[in-house]
Image 1 (cartoon, rainbow, N blue to C red):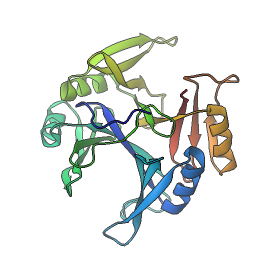
Image 2: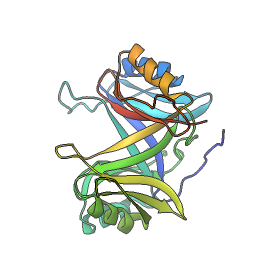
Image 3: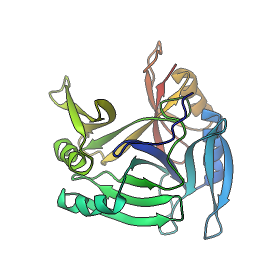
Image 4: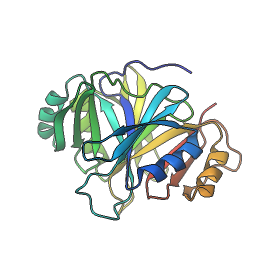
Length: 256
């Protein structure tokens, strides 16, 4: 395993789950990924959990906000590293996006904001303080990839280019569309793909697993649902998409 201690501006660095029932989510993902947890109180008397692979911090499971309506499904969020969150918030409006929250100082851990590109798709922004992001990346049990499903892919690509200076590679698809990847220093860090008609714009988040077929079976055993089945003969890079018992959608990618 390679320990990550920092992330470049514009690189996905962190993911968290907002769930109606934190204890139930901890049980599901603990069985799926082998996560262990450390619990911390929230100001309103509830608690959130930091998730670990071994002794490496990889994610957080937190309660939904008190203003969210009852029955709101769990949701995974992805965060992009930022050297100056306040400047990004100002730039987002000029780039045609929306500021949904922040920037807000979160103690000494960092600065948080939520933005959305044209077409939608809530995007977390994280300016690191003491919390640098996931200690592992592209490893089993850790964040491995993220792609934005949006009805306005080219506008979204332009938005992220303006905010972070991403380079872009386009991959033509069989349906005549294209899959765009955002790059930093020549390395691909995230994808942007046209959403199917009627689909809500959102980030699809991928976590690594050692065996995608076994992980999909475990998700079912723990009360989840497999939305996209893995290949019949899984190999490195094989994918599956699951929905946890509280409605949180997550993709899995097999990593050696």
